Length: 195
Image (cartoon, rainbow, N blue to C red; front, side, top):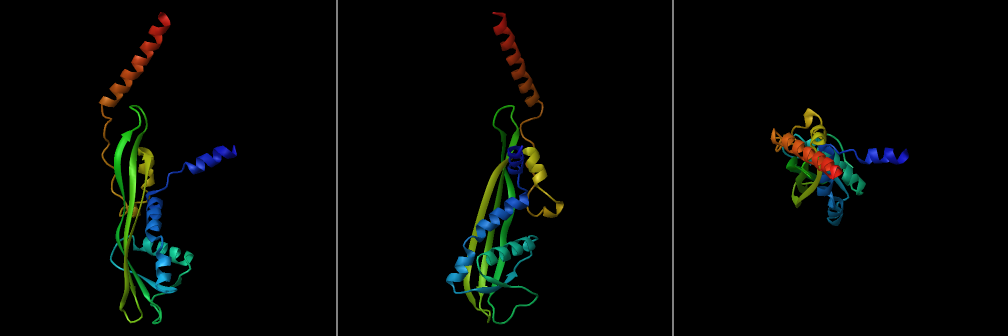
């Protein structure tokens, strides 16, 4: 029973937001070490641009920096003694790739690709640029068509993913092919028994 529950838990398909978060974390990998190499141990994080996902990027950046041992100064305004890390999301999206089936009558699947590109600018307390860094991350998976529809998540996440591609294949031809295959199998079964 326990094994069945574990399998069910592991089979849960990540939402588009979770897949994008994985790509974002991949883009942030090594950021804390990069700041440490520049002898920066505390920063004030400032978001740039009007991307609708700025809140999402900010909370992930803060979490990754804290986990990496970088102190993060929070609040409306930054103290004068702390450098500013400006973060500009260039791209955060989940797009869909190939749609198809493993077999003629198998489950229809679609490729999901999550991509994230960020631009970082580190400023000293006087506003002089200390460093620029551009990073990116990518994650992908293949899910069933129905899972992809439910994994899109809330309507508030429309900025994150495009619409699923048009339903390809299928139509009238697919039931005809499936019916033909099933009829052929039945015929072969009974013709072999008759001999």
